[in-house]
Length: 475
Image 1: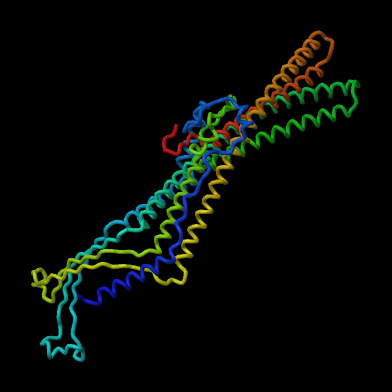
Image 2: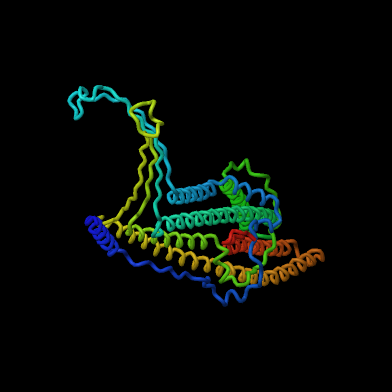
């Protein structure tokens, strides 16, 4: 028996035990929250509803909005960036998968070399100065993934790709919400402009009456100055609303990535009606309906796999190598049977001393895992806060709208009574103009509630995930 073999085996076993002695403990799977912490009191007061659909903006039945959102999703640099991140993650997955397979490469070399007169083999002894060297071979290599390092790297790449895809959905939802909110803001500005023009008409009419009364000696001059100031204020308000509408057009163009002149024609339309509905089981299902929560969860899963891969680095790698080759110094004999030069072997890579590099890498991966878990918790709590805030806002707006409707009815009766008194000659037109101004103010206040309601409806849709589902099937 060869005495070298037991000694070599003993040395190998000792080295293996020494390397594994520093192996860190396996990191347990993190326990993530399974439900969003929604406020039960707020949720209980909201009527039941369905989850948003994927193309949720179509429920407003506005073809112009449909076109704006679609163009934004097709042309936005933000979406292109998100898609690029997803493509990068997919390529990383391909790289990780390719590293696990069998590596095969071919090589061929042809050289002509002169022997030195003063070399180890003198040409006088060999009988020639120049010779040819031809080599042709195919090499195969396979690394055994005994400790799961490559499997963990592939799983981490898969999870990262899924996270990038979910992040792209988050970016698309944010863009669609921004376009919708800006578009309806422009629509509200058109109604504000119409009301401002009515106020200006009333102010001009009141100024003419006051000017005539001052000329007749029925009022003092300061009454005309006050009426003139009211008209100037109405003109300023109209200019402010027109400027706001133009700014929203510019913002829409920026969201679409085009010039304002390239926007589709925008026509004034009434704001759509909304309802403050909340899906059932929102606290549980919200996790699967929010793309940002899903992306955070996949980031945690990727971090878990990266920790596993870093831990596997402490263990030895074992690979098989095989070479099928032909070698000859004669071109004509390269493919003869005697020119074969095969080789096969086993390689073991065992980390022994690395100045703490592997442990530092493992610690860094664990820190990334803790950061990913904290980010998941933060994202989940923020999502619950978004939903709770928007539901509370919608409920508040609904209550204010009911009270405002009662005020509008009372003001309408005042306007009708003032108009009757003018017709009967009991009062002059100023009382009716004052009542009309109050009625315009009521309509303006109702408009602001409607505009706030549509903005809250869009925000609630975004808070509920905008039709995203973690399983990839949009409702």
